[in-house]
Length: 273
Image 1 (cartoon, rainbow, N blue to C red):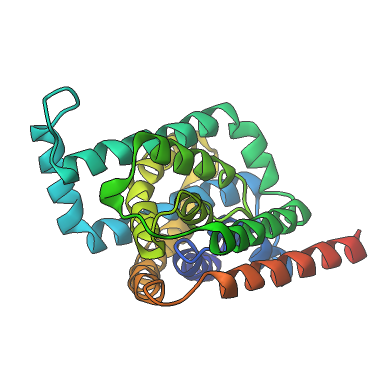
Image 2: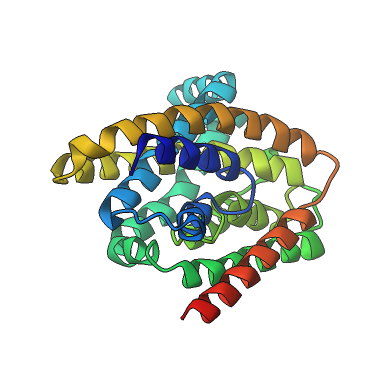
């Protein structure tokens, strides 16, 4: 992987991590379409570690919320009586992260292998499109984060496990999960972005360990740094834009995009095979 490739893929990561169109899927499809021959292990580690750039974007954008949640959680632990709303939200975010963490550890090999299969990524994009259509069709969107329950959090967390495979959008799956539990669209997006923090921290820690043991670690570092910086900058802008967009507009355009790209990928893969 070259420095320019790392920079461009970082921009792709930053733009697509929070838009519900699958960043991991685009990180597989873009090199495939451009004919880049990337070493599979390096590409997989890059894909995971560059997410730390978008994690930085979330931390920066929601820094006041995250600090308030952390302070409230330290004061209002489970079983300590009536918890403040922000403490309750923090525990729900941790609860929602458990299914994805467990799935990532159990399915690590299968997930890594799926990054080498553009056709299956295209098929998973169709699943993302279906989830977004269902969310808009079936979600009543009348509840706020203050009304979310532990069952809601687990449901959203289970939806997030689908996004372990490239092509299923993490933000799309969690947005759809929240909306199918009747949470308002913008509120579901906020929950989705906040719950990215623990899952990205865990995934990044595992990938850093893998990177330290990889024989190509030194060569991979410059493009990873370039990807990190570009994904952080673009990711921050994407979060800001999407939260404003979802106040008044639906997920249908993103569903159509995933449908078109998924079908095009399947067609291209079929013709190429």
